[in-house]
Length: 339
Image (cartoon, rainbow, N blue to C red; front, side, top):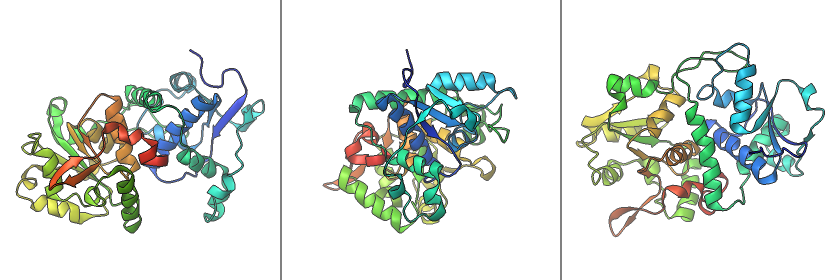
């Protein structure tokens, strides 16, 4: 099987350190870049010192040897990409250019003129026109490859040579030796930076039919409507959070049903990779449809064959119901550029 761009010198290049948004956005940007390469039959190139490797390597595909040749060959083969170690290697390539990049940078000052940032944002807003099932299949394969190569605590990142952490550190910290047979739920509490998060949820509500604030507020009643029918209120409930809305935690702690089984990840074990694994491996995941990180977790669960991801809920005649299935996180009509 040949990789995209095998018969031309066209190159989509990801470079620099400036990115559009935080890790949830960046993971979408990487997935969209891989999709763009496939859709347009071009090679995806990644500069060795650029943001995609800074985002991925702390969680996946750590370098196991100071001689990076073996790692580079494996990474390129696994994801059908080309890694460049310096700009002199680019001379034979025809780098993809866009006419509308400047408009993506408007209002962002110097950052808005940075080529790395603009390409990052371009990839975020890229919406593939591939048929939905084909798109889900390709995106799921990317995620499956990542999780086949999740970090176990050995190896380093690129350039900075920082030691990587174990992606299972969060599960291990809470459940110890029982971590491979434990039953639990995870809530992703994300405030989405206050008022802008409320607006984003309202847009998501209009496109998907979900409640405009329930996934932001995570009220006990909302959580129990999901977990009680599944018999999950007697098992541990974990919260991963951006730490911006302590009212959510306070309400859950004080609830007579949820409080006794609520568990918080110890501070020294809380980090993005550990939180992602906790959520991906949970029996039930309750997320926020307007959060790119919730989207990544839900897509990961779908790729690994796990059900019971709840992002799109609304009240119908007094009962909480799903307004959209698991594959909605890929539906461009609902998610737009977050698909």
